Image (cartoon, rainbow, N blue to C red; front, side, top):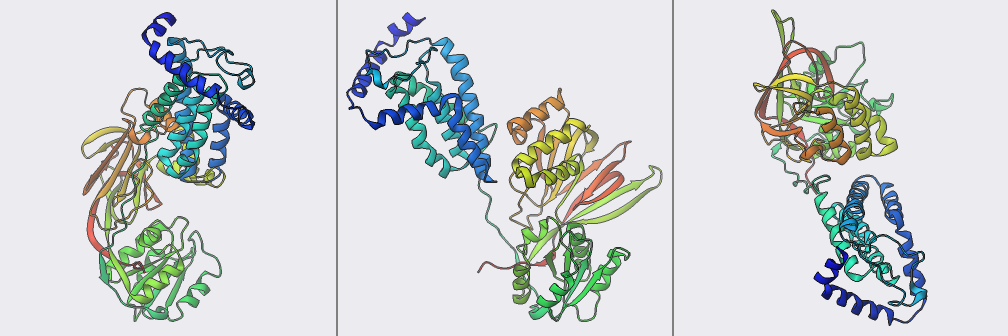
Length: 499
């Protein structure tokens, strides 16, 4: 095969020798030692592993870029060293082609075609750049230097480096399916509506859930300080929260209802606000504050500014109709959903991810949490809109969340009129292995086990085995069926306008 390669590609050999002669004619100097060290630093991918470790210290896109770069590098290295070096054996440059003092020692004994160092270098730089272009641009000269160093030190011919670089770039592009580049989020858009101005909290009645995630003994005093004219009702664990919310909304002189608490408390307050035709001021009093963040009142300062200026917008409400109890005599209840609802293993996954996130960061914590959750869990058999599925997770969001994959994070539009439906199913053969593999390779969003859709009405039936349901973080057990609908622009909420 080697003789066929040389006969068929003699012009490549002539070009290689021409270029190597020009490298040989370069005067010696400190750059020779530099390229030897640079080449050696990339042995076994050490340089790129170190770069990935440094990037992983920064959560978010740098950490995601590091992981994508390592995946691309691993694919490029495997394809280059296992496949092409076997198929394309080629002798490396000899001492007669370059000055002896430039040669790498010891010279590798594997096939010269293609260059594994070049493939790994380009794969890591391009793979990283697909996720974080700035970091990719910074790594590009380093990758180019590693690729050139293989010619400068006599380890490879120029065509080996070019072919290896092409393989590396191809591996990075192929792994976009494994670690797809997320498109930019849409711009935040609000449907503005008039609302009372509340300087100093005049006309504002606030209900404070003392079980809220960020509540302290000083919370009520702090709220009274920023809203000195507001009526504040602190609800303690021995009190009926729903009744206290209703009483707060009915307090004389109330022109707007404020709420301090978790997403479940905010949902109950939203229902009361709609019932009493009051705008809602959501204060960041919970652990995650999903609605407050999406509304633009993720800090107390932002909430005070919006209330003082009377800046408000409209949001849809999700209506969740739940059927519980015995099959012969079911009990029905109607809940308000501001954010999300889920059945299956999602609540366990979120709990584990939040426990691991401080130490590992959100992306890696999500991978570890999902592996732990689905390794031990079992899928539920559910009927979703008349179709039977084995389901790991069924998730319904009130409004279109982004990114458009299995991990909803951000909702730029609060009144789009849709339900965001996401399912991870176990209908396929080898369901658990498929799931774990997709988690390990970052392909959950593109896998056949993931189903993404939008609707205005969704019905889920549990069949003979009642399911556990979570609505805005509040859990309900023994649910036989649940139906979701959307009530368009039913809620007026305070939201600061961009200044």
